[in-house]
Amino acid sequence: MLKGDPLVSIRCLVYNHEPYLRQCLDGFVMQQTTFSFEAIVHDDASTDGSAAIIREYAEKYPDIIKPIYETENQFSKPGDTIGHIMRAAVHPNAKYVAMCEGDDYWTDPHKLQLQVDFLESHPDYYMTCHAYLFYYEDTKAFEPHPFLDEMPLELFNGREYCTPSIEEYFNPIWFTQATTLVRRNQPYATDETLDHYPLVIDHIECYYMLKAGKCALFKDVMGVYRKHSGGLFSGHDLLKWAEIELRNKLVLYQLEKEPAALRSIDQHFVDTFIPYLSQKDFPKARQVLSEYVKVVPIKNLMKSLMRIIKMGVRSVCKTSCGTNDIR
Image 1: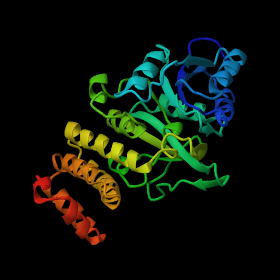
Image 2 (image 1 turned 120 degrees about the horizontal axis):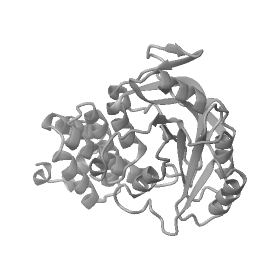
Image 3 (image 1 turned 90 degrees about the vertical axis):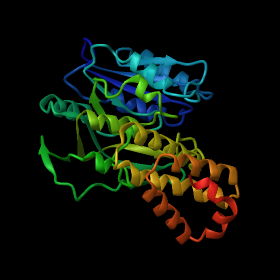
Image 4 (image 1 turned 120 degrees about the vertical axis):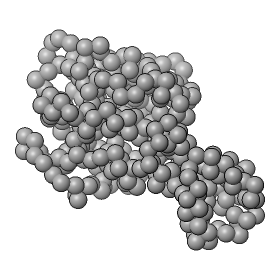
């Protein structure tokens, strides 16, 4: 490990990741670079042995692993609590920030070097990311993530990459994961802006990163996104997360008036409204509908309602939603 201030600060969030954490931390310490880097490993009051593993690695690699141990879970608090903590922990002289959650891992020892080299030579780009594999813990199977093959590809140091736009960001299949990101350590949104969101997740952060500058998406697979029962998204109620996504995107549309967000908003609305109707949870269905119609243009509302009717829930809709609910 080279001495001196880190050029890159890696942000790693950990909560009950004991079975996977060593693989994640090994991905950090194996990086081969011409510069110094650090990994800020934030344990969010885990109830398993995650903190002990972090202490072990911090003792073995004190120049790389910089631990934060919470006694109270921060993720469960409203707003962007963890974001504030992690932004404050990044080394003040770090030029770049990388991300990887404690249950994911990197597979290429040259990943950081490649992404940093690109940003050093391309000042108009704000961030870089790369292709990755899904790993399903229950079946022990890998699956490639659908990639934007239709995008025009360029070459950098023998590696193919494309430059997705904000419109691609709102595609039904999102083009990246936080685990793949390396970005400039420059503000992409104010704390005041991020605090408007119910829960600041990587989809929201990446939108503002794309507004701050272009993104290079490398075709190489350099990491693994793990899906398992304890994962932040895969281990929780998917309906709950669809509702969070809907509220986040509604706030985004209200703040930014981003037309490309409407397609995503419409999909999240359908993905929450129909299940609540199916479960006969009519108060929740009315709440989601009310939040949706207050923000979207009338044409989007009508398209979504027609889609719901075509999906065969017309009778349920009549039972649960009176005309007073629709404006």
